[in-house]
Length: 211
Image (cartoon, rainbow, N blue to C red; front, side):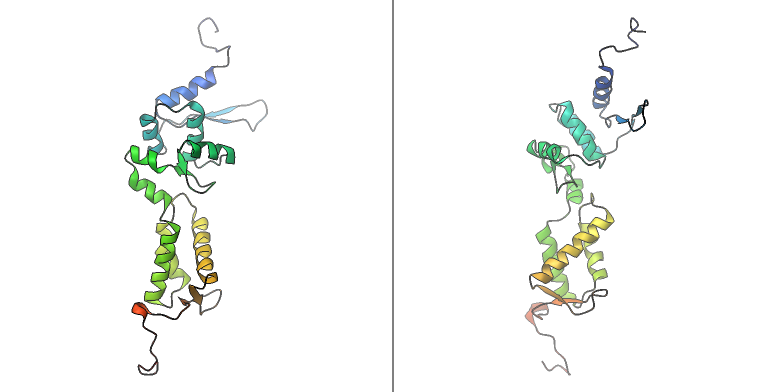
């Protein structure tokens, strides 16, 4: 078997599998060592993330170690903070750890600008400004109104629960800084501007138009 080159005696077979997958622009092999005296290998023969694949086609200078880390990012597998720093230092990923995604510079180079923006989501300050504008224009605004307004604007790499938590934190920040106030209950909030202003700076009129 050795003479026929069917067995690798130098331990290079594993590395060759990684290199072959790289050459085919496919995901890296996955090894499962959870069972004693048994190794499970998974080889994927299809593209998982086109950004990752096109990036490999465009960036032939990347070493195998970086490619393996980026492969984990495309598979939504958590990497260590040190590995995250390594990828960020190489300008290959961005986002708040552990929710990383392919960096905009790389995404733009392979024609994935729109996909990158969807994955990253809109800027936090921009989302805050949008919520404040929504509350001023349509007060009182419920949490359900705000969820419908923001959910599709948050990063696609976040889970639904993480998106809801981010909205909760955004509302808490706006309330704590005195921008908006809840005039409903904690369970059924009704958000209005803290300064009572309506669109165009007009105060709310009651009692037949009297202020």
